Image 1 (cartoon, rainbow, N blue to C red):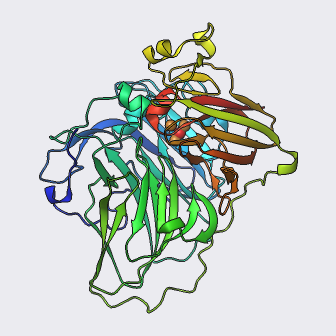
Image 2: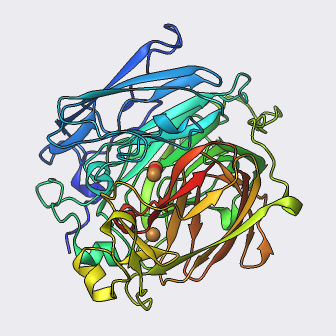
Image 3: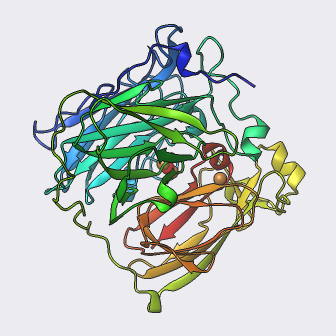
Length: 477
Ligand code: C2O
Ligand code: CU
């Protein structure tokens, strides 16, 4: 195993508002074209004591530039492919027309090397989103292609600072180069590609400088291939105000721990209630026996900005999501199977691979280890029978059952869904999500109105699981 880069190995860097992020042309006419160049570039991830890392980047930066727009704006992004392989860009969590969804062969032809594509859509929901390739995703995202998209409310909650933290997890060798072990059967069939270097905004974090008394809106985005975070804020009491971009009634996270699976986002209100000069830690405790310090909160010596947290409201205005009508909803069941130690499914290949059922050995020989309702979908599948066909405009309830021994953050494109229950118990706050984490053996009920026509991807966002079969399309027609 490759050893973890630790903080004593590098010079601590302060993370200030937006240091590693470049703002888009915000006011320069809302429909101005923003350009994203996907290209290899050198970047320093682990600090000056180590060599640079050759990454794949948007506009030379890791993460890609922060795109900031207002709710209702039109977003036009010209993607130029300067990689040596095809790519696409998917704007994760944005409810948009199907043709702009960025899925190769399903919604568009892949963007060939030297080619370009214009993504053009409006932003119906305010919130924290992100963008990433949907082509050879497990490698392209792991090499650095991911960036944040913030859609501002017309009337945002009052805060002193709005910070975006893009959390990533890199698998680096001792020379800080990205390990080349993509697609190995172990990662595919177990927990995915877990790294050894967790970064915030593309840098190994040291501390974040804060002022006593200030109120921060902290937007967390997990762009890691496989790592789930369980963040514990020593000495502080964060309130969650949005999940996956969608407002939720402000609440303290269960056990004080913010769980963030791959692709998920959380917006927190953090009141800096500790005295000037003090220092606290944010740690990640998700994996047993692998807790580590993520970053320190370092209070400056200035006198407190105020004596007590502001009394201004922190609840966000709702986004225009249609509420599903449970009584008249169509019901569906989706079963996740496969993986190591799970009794591999007797899955069958779908669509163009043709033919009848294939045994597990034959599937594994093709790099397929997971299935949804018995079908393992290869990554390069061009056309596949939909897993489900949903009547356009109708309310839907889908029961998701994880019959495997592994976590799966399941993501649906083109819609946000409401999580109603988990293992028979009502889900706290019934959040609207686009990616829901299922633990082993979990049974989760989600509901939404199928109001967006098209063929939409439904897949695990552990990108190695997506690559090895845990992907499907859901048709709304
Ligand atoms: Cu974040 Cu199908 O993707
Ligand atoms: Cu999975």
